[in-house]
Image (spheres, rainbow, N blue to C red):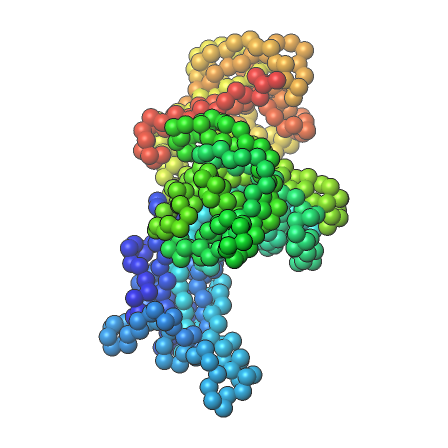
Length: 586
């Protein structure tokens, strides 16, 4: 076997690609020449000592490739025979086809043979014949941030042929060589109920957030790319940057020359546009540069940062990042371009676990009818460094949050292990997880412990409707217990629900956790929650059709505090607290 893999992690006991690894794993690529016809999953499982389901997951992820004939091995790869390795895994060899046509071989024959050596993705298990070649990316590059996002909220606009999203940092736009699933194109499509990923029109770096246009049809992609290729005359892009040093307002020009191979194939070195260097001209205009306090917990800064508004005039790979670094103002968090003096070379420094940089694609203006309307402007919200609390980029590296049809996940890609762990803690009678709610009701309730028995509800009101009866031993059902800690009159001035009189805000400790428990118990106490049309004015023993909620679909209930006294969430006694409820906001 060739020295082409990194066996830093033992996958022999891994049942699935989930849970996600706590830290990113180094690339590991294995090459297999098939000696006996069999299912690809069986061959890979036996050759690499992997669980079959783990191999199936790799296939679904697009991390397994197959070709009829082994391609020529890379020049740097040392090939050993099976006798030397004692294994049937090897670099491509034997019947591999060279890159040059043999004497007497026609061009057509040569091209047909080359076609058979080109590995293609195996997205599902299948029989592979003797002599075939398999390439397995055992440690696909992962993008855990996809599971932290509510992708429906990320949709900025939608047309018949296109979608505009506010791309989060930490997620790739397009598939990688070993990961088809964890992409903006796939998750945005799932949020819209589409079965196939959206199509790529242009790209933003993984660490960059902001406005991104995706296509629903190939014809739109062609038309949009034609507009993009018109020198950015009809598409204007404005970026926000966060840098460690200020830059001068005005037009900036550099020449992009060949980068440093130690820093990766996309690294770009910017040189002065003085005619002494050959390369691609890169032009941008700094419209504004303002000092700003960077209070985000993502990146710790000792001094002020500088926020700039930048108009992109040309569009080169890493252009803004490389040009700002060349100006002595590298973007915050950009370890690839940070502190790299011209003419100096140093090994690439990997980005931190958050994987974010101070760059946002803020505005996109389209002065072409390709998107239905000339002059349409799409705008992202506040960048991460302006938000007091932002989504945890990278926080899902050890788990994916549960998401069932809510736009947060695609198919089965959730962390079942974490769900099992947290559900085990929850099932422990709420001893290790304490929940405090805020309620807004139309009538007051007494402070103290409240008990009811939940019995079968009213079928006219839906399968989840719960009827509460007194816990006096006369009724059979599930015991429901909560404690009202505080009840205070409050003026409800929110425009969401119009109230003629005072309301009452309560702090409620949930002791048991039943379906609709607080809603049903407060209704049984004669204090239905504001806006709760399902439980409002339902005297015991009386039945009426379910009333649909208003257009806002809100009720006077907030899960205010959550305290976890179990190490399942890394720290015992951690408390999570929401902000002001909607009825306290103007």
